[in-house]
Length: 121
Image 1 (tube, rainbow, N blue to C red):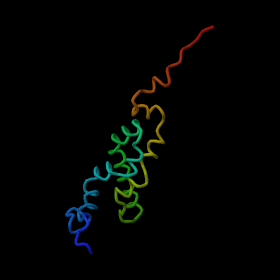
Image 2 (spheres, rainbow, N blue to C red):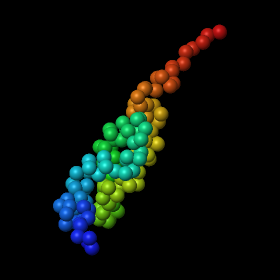
Image 3 (tube, rainbow, N blue to C red):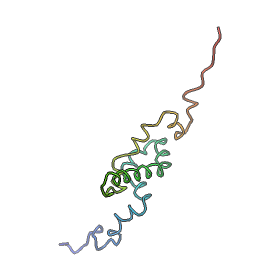
Image 4 (cartoon, rainbow, N blue to C red):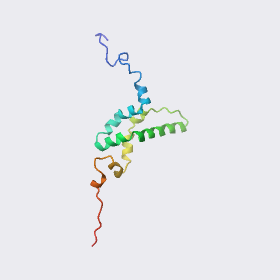
């Protein structure tokens, strides 16, 4: 502060600095939809739809991880924002069959894989 100006990111100038980390834990939707890994994953339209619809499934997967920590005798220390950094979107989307992924695309799988016809000789 040699020039007399204060940085806009200064702790004393930004009243939300003390709440930022807590808000991401109290409102997991904030952590999910602002996740850098999620934003990188959701570039393509089908992936974007998957990302928008999968909050509940991925949050439940996180809760399962916390349960595993508790059952293992440890304290549940993993935060949801930390869980999202491991990119559960790509893992979950990659494990889906093409038919399941087709429901997230702009067109169904019927256009890319038409039904076969029987040809009798």
